[in-house]
Image (cartoon, rainbow, N blue to C red; front, side):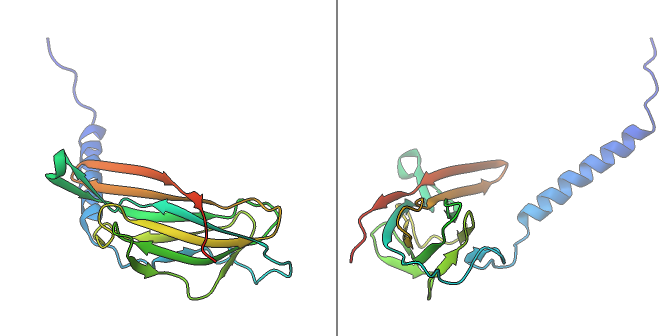
Length: 182
């Protein structure tokens, strides 16, 4: 019994698939330009509100920049994105301070020189590169924020991703409101 002839499109399809895999691998391995650590959309901010910002909060967010595995034998470094969302449909959210700390609680970096006022439902992100291992195991963020009385609290979480060979990993770490020093 004779096999049916191959369609002329199959070799072309195989070539396109091979090129796609090659291009994807090259893109994944080529370094990207250094990203700005704080990312805010052009229409996400506004000026300070006229109303008094009477509610002041602090949110603590773990950001696992390095995880140890196999009893401490292997380590995996993660890139991280701290994501701060104004969960209010009508009120402005002031982000006053964003601090990144290592596992010993020591300040690594403070990201804002002045408050940022997020419009309703707007957000901002703070990025940590995968090769930035200053936080080590136990890294974290604290975010100081303010809003008007009766407004929804912000939604703040960290998303961590790691790509190593053919494997990828992702972790979501929710923030938790903690007491804010006066």
